[in-house]
Amino acid sequence: MKKNRVILGLFSLIIFSLFYMAHAIPIIKFVYYYTGVSISPNSITIVQGGSGTVDVEAYAWGYNALLKTTFSITNISVSLQASNVPSGVTCTFSPSSGPISTKFKLTINVGDNVAPGTYNITIKAIKSKYTSKPGYLILIVEEKKMDIMQYLIYLIPVVIGVVGAILFFLIKKSKKGPRPVKLVLSANPSTIYGDGRSVSQITVMTVDSKNNPIPVKADLTINLTSEMGTIQSPIIIPAGSYYAVSTYIAPIKFGSEKITASAPGLSRGEIILNIKEKRRYCMWCGAPMALDAKVCSVCGREPPSGVDVKVCPNCGAVIPTVAKFCGECGARQP
Image (tube, rainbow, N blue to C red):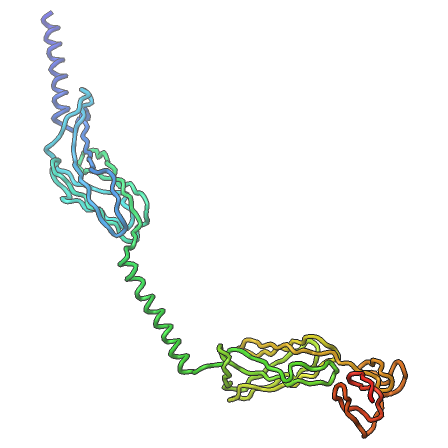
């Protein structure tokens, strides 16, 4: 019986020694050591180009696997480390290392080119043979907004550049003097008969925006077009002049005739002529005749001719003396 008590006592002593050694000698893996961090606040918002600070507190503890108990550790020094830091962001600890009781300051500097967004930065307390339990800091980067003064700073060079360009253009323009910008047409007369031979003189002028005549510096070719009659084209405005004249020949038609003038670099000009209907009458019987008819379709006679003439008392037209009717207005002659 006494022998059993001795054996039991020795066994208890061995077990107690093992527990003691587990606390005293870390090599025996009955006890594990850890470090951790506490971050306050654990989230920070910083504008591009700005900075901010948070407080970091380190702590350490041990865990006895046999007793399943934890215990605090206060007599060690640690160094702090940040990882998963985005490009353009720097993290600085003050101090960089110290005892567990130290209150660390973490300063975060965000560069101007860091993209706006949310980032998770990992913070660890490092100690040899200790397992680090990380803490996490949420960094929110906001886009930098310019204030009124910054807008003005950016805007002033632009305004100066625009004003300078305008002044340069105006000075350059004033040195060159006025220049023609468009064509203006006039007709003399503006109303003619549609008889295939009546003419109108079409004057083409170069003018500025206020319709003031402006001479051209070099010969200017003008192209003219008409819808019914015949127009002389092209014509040339010689250097130093501001106009040229073209001849328009009426068609054997009547109505409104549009004449258009164009030249390189100038706005085109237009004018409307009034082409009146031309009537012709047989001077023997007074019947209407086509303008190009050689004999009267009613009496079959050709128009009279001769050097002796008289004046129609009705319309003033000059007609042969032998005519019984006026070829212009159809009035019977006395």
